[in-house]
Length: 412
Image (tube, rainbow, N blue to C red; front, side, top):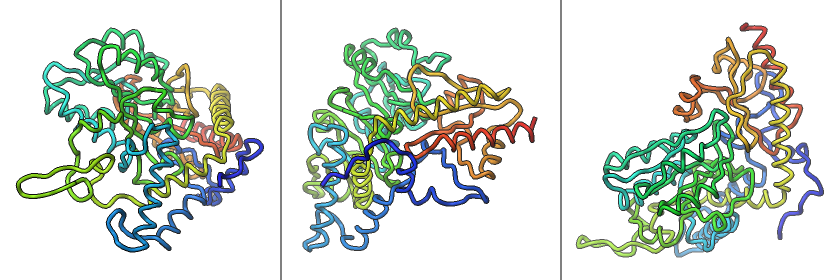
């Protein structure tokens, strides 16, 4: 039975579902604003993982006993749940991976080594996480292809005019994040996909920062690959998904070898299993898949459109309060954004500010956010990043800025 939908969005009611939020850190109530790094987990997810280990712990697809049967049923039902969540035409197009990083590596090494060669290009915007840069550099180095950066504007948007000038028959892949982890930029991916397909290029979307904030419909997007992580979607760490078009996945060679991904093995040769198992060598993260499905079931009881509006209101309040702080500079002001507020404060190193905020119970991220080319673009060593989720509140934004004001008094 589907969970009951709350009559109206209520961040305080949602907070009650997340046990970790109800604690003190360094003598202060916890304010958790590092959601772009990982989200916290509702009780429903914690219980689903614990119940698997209490009742059903067994390997999947292999055992001839009741526990294995139950574990296999729950594991494959989780695949169905996640596939429906992104509107996959079929569940077997969803490959379990450890997270977005492994998903991108799978595509780069499996698809890339088969389809890239000297003279070919992979376009990668300056906005990208290292996980969507380095795998392409590795594969291009091995195949003779070239990684070409796509310029961005000062506001932190992809320069679409520059992107179009780079598009020609040499481009075989466009690897772009759906949402920037460092700035919160929501990229115009539908337009990017259409333009890339017009020259015969494939498109991989890094959806790690998108999937928890608005609906993702891979069929409507018409992307070729979509990668995401469970732990940014209120699910556990160590689990994620790679979705791909069936004809592409069928043509790609396996990424890892071993158990489960085989059909037959002999020293004369090996034949491989069907999708999705061809790409799932070894014992999978069974409890992770079950926990991720539980997170999605939890979100079915939340008005996600209202949650997105709430998160943007927190961002707007952050921008408003920032205007009252001399020397505070927001990094990036994209045309469309999720609730990520990335900034620097004159005279205060981001790491020092992060440490001071932590002493007041406020958890933020500092540094280059695995986006060093983007930091170089803005000529900063790093930023302080406050990233909001559906359980954050306006009072927590106020706490963040109280800490910023205290830092100014101490350091400037």
